[in-house]
Length: 421
Image (tube, rainbow, N blue to C red; front, top):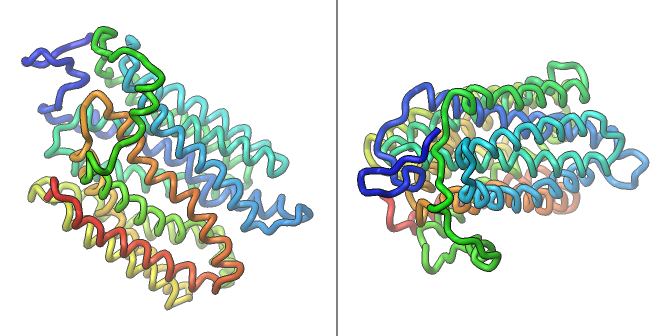
């Protein structure tokens, strides 16, 4: 692996990419991305909720409250870890490049943390294990995400973002499937851990990373490092509005997913709620897969981002409202399908939009980490909003109405972005 420069003399690791990436690179990065999502969503969809149900009796708290504490604590760690490791990867000058060391270390640590959760005997170990999962897998995810603006030209980012979105939902479905099919909580964690560790190998072994020379790394100062995490909405208004859009739509989605298992069990009285979650996840995944790549490619071809984000956000809000209005198993299936269509387009095009508003190349990992806070912060806010709504303020009907309003607000704010069509 060598350190190279573009024709203008700028380090290749910091230059704006112009050469299109090939299918092998894209598929390997997508597999790595999907493996990370397996490590997250096997626990989030099934395993943590099952453990909370087992551990809650005798603790004085409900299973909903225990799950909220565990996922909320992990989300706080995620909130801090993603931008931190993104910033550290920006400054990494190892012989293996800036991103690869963090992908390897993060997924290895994530696998070990999932194994810790497999042996959890109570809420304390659950909190510790899940926080470690969030810490380590966010290190890997920050590096995987930053590889896209490092290597992919602007007019290919919609399609690459689409394939990454497809890998994301396959990771969600795969994690849910592994957690359900292995026959137990411990076995589910082990299966997710193995897949997470193995899934990154094709990318890190076959595709060398761009290396940053020590001379091209800016001087170190704690003050400058910490100050860099503040991206002023006044100086970068497009980034600020794009961040808020992502936050609100992801918050709406998090409110839908958080208590899905309990919604099926306690509200719809589904005969097998865990299997029901798997069915809804698969339906959502199929419709998402049908639109995520198409949406990204279409956005690249017409050179526009905002209309795709607006209409996908509105469709997701409508589907969420449907969960409040039509509280039956067929209603849940229809809502899952519509959410998949909307989230598919949103996932690919919003990712491309975000990379288009990054302030500068030197801080891609850190800036994307700050942007990814809009993915993690909803995991903190969702339990705080959902638990009192479900328990005291109207139950699941009110929960999904609130989620629909939040998602609609996110879709409407896209129009405030001026620098991207």
